[in-house]
Every structure is written in structure tokens, then in C-alpha cells.
Amino acid sequence: MVKIAYVTLLGRSDWALVNTYYAVASRGRKPEKVFIFTEEIYRKKLPAVVEAIKTISRAYRFTPEIETIVIPNNSFLEADKRFKELFQRLESEEYIIGLDITSGRKALAAAAVVQVRDFSVDRIIYMALLDMDFPNRPYMMIPRHMQRLKNFLGDGDVE
Image (cartoon, rainbow, N blue to C red; front, side, top):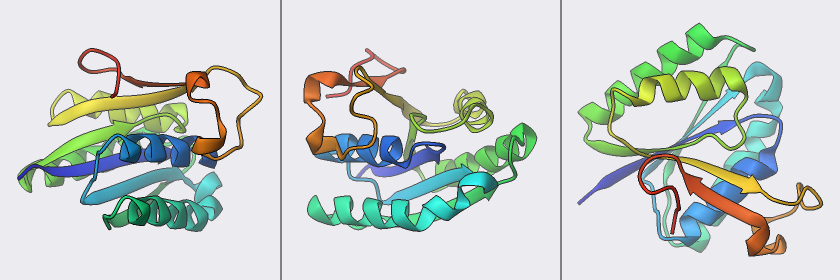
């Protein structure tokens, strides 16, 4: 059985993280573990985001372990170190890793992507919102044609 870990980055938009997770779960991806990386500036958003991940997961009948990792603001080196440690651990436990960079700030996203080259990451996900009239709404309240879920590894589309 394939074990899946989902690594996501929380930045300015908590809706971007939650909606991307919803889109991925609705397409059948059911991770056993979810890791939410954020910077100190966004720490206070974590409880609501964790609760949203739990709620979405329960709706699709799975209950991942959820871990949060807070990095000092703009600390590329610390983020790089923490992603490497996490990816090494997940690889040693034989997990396939999905990485969502939709909401992440540049220091986190760059550090995560730099580490991808050495580990079992099968997708780098980004959900583009094509119309900014819908930025702070739940996934199901945004017309689907206004959301483009992309996998930067493989053929590009996530379905």
C-alpha cells in the first residue's frame, strides 16, 4: 500500500491552502500525514487551518495525522534545513510526498522546491485562481472553471 504525505505551506491566504487541500482530497488523494509549514507571522492562522484540514478529511472519510512547523520569518536557511529533515524522515518511512506551494511565501516555497530534487516527491501542486473576485471563499463556492489545479511534475494537470 502506498503511504502518502502531504506537505503544504501557509502564507498570506489561508483560503488558498484550505481550498487546494479540498481540491486534492476531492480528487481522491488521502494522505496519512499532513505537514503545514508557515512563518512566525502567520502562526495565529494555524488553529483554524488545522481544523479545516480535519473537517475536509473527515468529509472524505480519512483522518491524517497533522503536524505544524513554524519557521522564523524570511528564513530560507532554516526552512531549507527543516524541509530536508522532514523529506529524509518521510523517505525513510517510505512515504510518497505531495507538495502544495499555493499559499506559501517565497522563502518557504523556494526552500521546499530546492529539496524536492533529492526525494520521492510525486507532485508539486499549485492552484491558480483565475478571477480575483473569489479569493476568500470556500472551494465549492468558487466556479470550478475559475480554479486551475496544476502539478508542476508530470503532465501538469491534476485530475
